Image 1: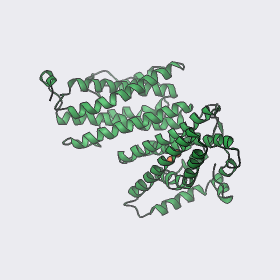
Image 2: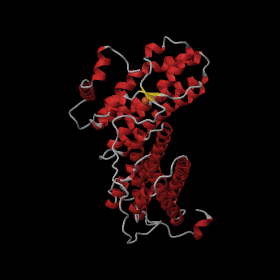
Image 3: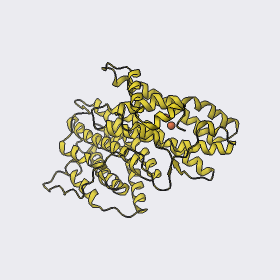
Image 4: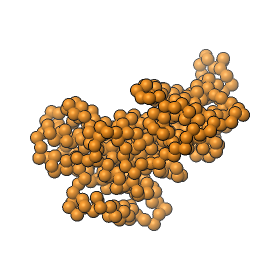
Length: 401
Ligand SMILES: [Fe+2]
Ligand SMILES: [Fe+2]
């Protein structure tokens, strides 16, 4: 209770609060999927990094909205939304390039969502609707940051054709009635026929060349300074793991999987984006620039179903690389190399969490399945053995890098 309640509007009842929150949740969930797709597709690694952070923001927002919906009477969070909104949100990834995608998402759809949040906050009752007010006030500054980034990013390139953003906005007409009541205007025609397809490799720009990372054993023969540089090239390469997770999220989000799973995958993806960023930061500190990426582990995994991909990353690859983590942190510690030590320490801790995600979710998905986790790993192995690159490494007992 505060003094302002005497002059506030009537507020929103439980049923209408639930209906609005469900629509907001659908937008955040669609933004997660679209951003995941563009983490793989955007050529500039700096854009991939920003999309990773934004992905995790949207995941946190989606989780918070879902939590509030479960508290509301009749607030079933996965009740279906209006087909028109669903269709409109399905269009989100289909921009023709990073600039058009960014313009459509951040300045189009997120702009409309921000207007809806502003209108919601205007009509919400400060006591009756206090939980929603707190929730939306936590989301709004994050989205403002995304929009500010988008404006800066778009200043640095040829302005995208606004017709894609205008089309998306027209598709959303009426979706947020607090901000703009439905009108009879006809939706705009689609300005182009582009259909987003999740790539089968990691898209990069021409600053990055393929491969060229030294194997673990070869790195150990170098001087300390040379080894650190090579090691942080491998950190930069964790983009492969971020992109496997982005592909899992992109593919899984179109089926009926729990939001909690998508949000753990989003967190994991964001962690791997940060680990790659550790590489870019440390290489720059060493007077170098990221110039190599080996997408082989992404390419070998991307053709498997999303659960096999997730299982392979978390319970094969991350478990395989784990024994390197402690000695590496101790090596940097002994050398008094604070920056390298910090990144190695955080990476090690995150990786323990990732294996935890792997165990939790593979078991969850297999709970009504005749297969065990070991059976799933065997299916992964059967798939990998169809690939020449994997057979070659396996025959020589080689680690990928
Ligand atoms: Fe990592
Ligand atoms: Fe990891």
